[in-house]
Length: 119
Image 1 (cartoon, rainbow, N blue to C red):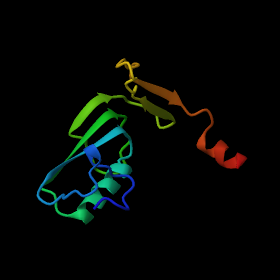
Image 2: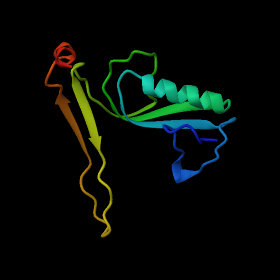
Image 3: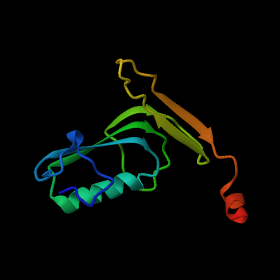
C-alpha cells in the first residue's frame, strides 16, 4: 500500500499496511509550518479511514501556516523565521556505543531578498 508514497514509512519496514480503523502515529523531527504533516495526513486519508491520528515531534519551533498541533513534543524551541533547526540522531556503532544526539539552531546568513537577487 505504501508503494509510491516515498515520504511515508511504517516502522519495521512493512510494505503493506492497512490504516482502516487504526490509530496512526506520525513522527517528525522538526515541525514548523505544518505543511509536511498536512500532506502526510492527506496521503493517509487516501489509503483509508483511520480511527485517529496522533503527531509526535522532537522539536516544535512554531510558525504554523496550517492549524496543526502536535500531541507529543520533545522540546519547544521558539525561533525567528530566519533561523533553522537541524536534528542529528547518533547511530549506534558496531561496538554498541552511540554518539550523542544533538539539536543545532542556526541562522540563515543572507536574507531571502538577497538570495533572490544573486540568482
